[in-house]
Image (cartoon, rainbow, N blue to C red):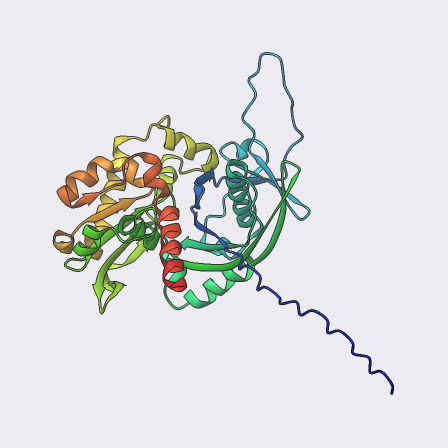
Length: 357
C-alpha cells in the first residue's frame, strides 16, 4: 500500500494595514510685503521683497559694515534673493499684481523661502503637506475666481525641490485649499489654538454680524460674516477690496519711484520712514471713505469689528476713534500680522477634526 504524502500548508501571513500618514497642516499668507506661515510647531515669516540677477558678492571691506544677506533661492537654473535687503543684491522685482499668485518664478521663490525659514526653525518635514492659502478677495471672487484658483492649485500641488543658500530642500503638497485673506482673519478670532470654537464668540456670531477688516501692504479688504442656516456665511453686499494698503502711502511718498518698495517698506515698518501728516491724513480719508461706502453705518450693529494686517498698526489710533468699543485688534504687532496664516491653520485643524469624526 503506497503512502500518501501530505504537504504541510504554508503559514498564512496576515498583512497589517499600513498606518495612515497624517499630513502636516499649514496656514499660508502670501502677502505683498511680508509672507507668513503657521503650523503645529510654530510660525515663520519673511519679507516678500525679491530680486534676481545678483551682482558678484563682496565679502568684506575694512571700515565698512556687512549688510545682512537675504536668502539665496535657486529655482531650477534661476537664482533669486528674498528678504529685506534683496534690493541690494540684485534687480528688484516689484510685480505686485494678482497674476503672480498663479505661480510666477518669483512667487515660487518667496514660497520656498518661507518654507525654508519654517524648516530651519522646527526641522525638515516628515510627511506630505496640506496647506490653506489666503488670497486677495479680488483674486478669489468674481467671474475669474474658478480659473484663478485652478491656476494656483496647478503649481502648488505636487513635489517641490529647491536650494536655499546652496542647501537642498523638498516638500510634497498633497492638498491646497484656497480662500480669502479675510476668512483667515475671521477664523483666527473665532477659533482657539486647538481649532475649537471660542464659546462666547460663537454665541455672539449667532446673534450679530461680525466685521473683518484686513489692511495689508497692497489691499484693504472688508468682509461681513453672519450665521445663517447653521453655517458661517459672508454678506456679499458688504464684502470687497480696494488697492488702499500701505503701498498707497509709499507711492505718494515717492511718486517718481526713485527708490524700490523693497528699500522703503522695511523703513515704513520700523518707523524710520517719516511720512508727512498730509499724506497720512489723505490715506486715512481714503481708507475710511471706502469703509463707509461699503458698510455705511451698518457696523454699529456688528458684534465686533476685527482689524488685522500691517496697516492696522499704522492706523491703530484712527481705528480706535472711529469704531470705539466695537474694535478688536490682536495684541501686539506680530499677532496682528500673523492673524491670516494663524486663522487658516486653525481652520484646517477644525476641518480635519470634522472629517475624521
